[in-house]
Image (cartoon, rainbow, N blue to C red):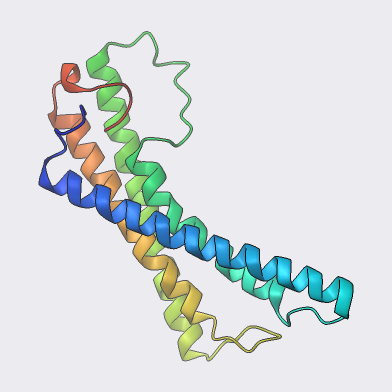
Length: 173
């Protein structure tokens, strides 16, 4: 859609996606700083940060989940449009809407299973091997980003299917 025509729901999703991406960026910066400190500690003092690899693995899962809504909102996922370039603009928008809808169905399924996995992990008191960090925490930190990604996909599908093709600017929804 053209900038400024998102409507209140689109503007809210836009802000939430930006906040989610900022949170993911902060987690990523913290992981990078921890890795640097751990490598320096390992190299010069024979004393790395205990569990640094565990923390990076768990943090990266959270980062991916927090960056997905930002990417989806900006229609920045990779698409293969080889077969659709000769289709009419209306058909392209219908297929884009179908793609956004199917994407939101998949992220909803993933969010549900991540939530269920987090609950099961909490019930079983699963913890990381070295730091004994409860594993349900990173699971649950992933859920909001996945749910937001689902909402963005549904919003985009609705916009693609209800907005006239001439009101679109580029590929952004």
